[in-house]
Length: 399
Image (cartoon, rainbow, N blue to C red; front, side, top):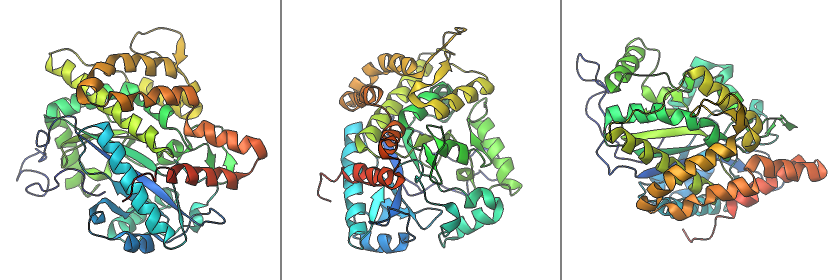
């Protein structure tokens, strides 16, 4: 994880002898954004994954982007992070610059770059673990669960101006997990086979401990006490080893939305960032107005999330907000959410980028595009080539 928001905090995380986890909520303007994406490094002929992250990182070093590009668990994966962005338009500009810089660095060593939730055919058994203590320790602790984690995600950070507010808004966001997952789904293949799932990545990552929807908390102190117990007993090194679909990020002062697959088309990543930003602002304003934020039983949230991972934009989900007994298409919930957050997007200056959500609904998700390519001639290599072409199509700005 690289720095998106100011990273320095005092102490080791907890006040001496107490349970209050230091935080930076309120240190950045509310609703500012940061986005992280994980990319595949590919052979330009076979489109298999290659173990050259250190080569690409060395080629990418130029001073400006050094803190924005880094390694991940496996040597075939590279992660980027934007600086703090005020609007989704800023995210668009920064992601295009980063994708351009990474792609040019990769091409200088005859490599390609791709962004999707899973590689369609590469095998995790053939990947090497990155030589960093964090990753070695992770594999030592989780064993097969970590070695199998050949998946790629997109994370969106949204700044919130209060710790208790962040906890309550995080809980309210959970009803939107199937929407966020269905819109971003881009992993219908695993180990060369169509899985019948829109997001195979979700099923792989579900094996991780401390993943999935977060539990309910009474407030920030309750959250900090739980994290403190995990830290003090040595179960985790710090709170970043809690991998919930949505989590508070105290060091950055943000809510981090982590449920999304990595996305090939940059404009779709930007649209999801605008969607996440609008949702956070919507619930923050309800909270500030003293209104009760929605909260549902985790088994219902988890069931809807599963349906989003299985069926993508065709998912028949429970309409928890109305309590209807019949299920509705997840796209219907997306359109309802759009109506609620469009005024917020206009205030934030992200309304044009939010329109990209309607484009996804009309044109289909990344998972649907991959399946169309595959069904045309059953060529899994062609699917991977199209992922790379779509990822590198963002190269419209000179880095």
